[in-house]
Image 1 (tube, rainbow, N blue to C red):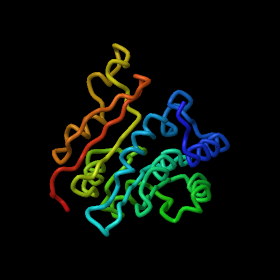
Image 2: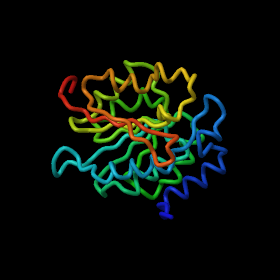
Image 3: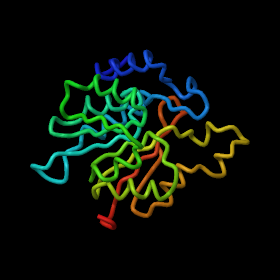
Image 4: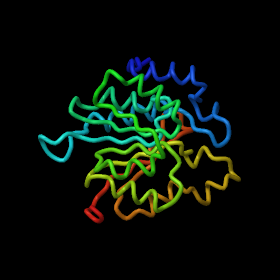
Length: 211
């Protein structure tokens, strides 16, 4: 079995101490859960290529919804030394705990506040992990506007269509897929994780509108 980065294992320990759900199944209805290992590895692959628009400019990564810091741990463990990670968490206690977890790494900034309000003005981003509730098309469009051309946005907690119950309303309409498919500035796809029960959406920004 692949060994987890030390930052990720430390964040998992923090999640257990804080009572933060590690899986979607553990989370109560309407409550967040931690970044899954398959999602984390995908984020690490993207973060490793975060180099900014051109040397000597550094790369910039944003995360909406820090949680217990597991997703941030995956990203920070793979991103280049000159890349910065800004992660936003609305829960003050969680944000404070994760700030302590990453205190030794000056590349990581943990911001307390509503991610949809504090993140768009912190770009432009090479990578955005939208792991908090994006409530409407306007909010999603603002996130896309904060990407560099060629920047990527990732959204998880999606269920593959084949894993949905026959009567699931998500077969007819899934707001996350609608966000991506309705955004003309993105080339996007769905990536199904190895467990075949979870997937994520990833899109790349392709034009200069709004920049």
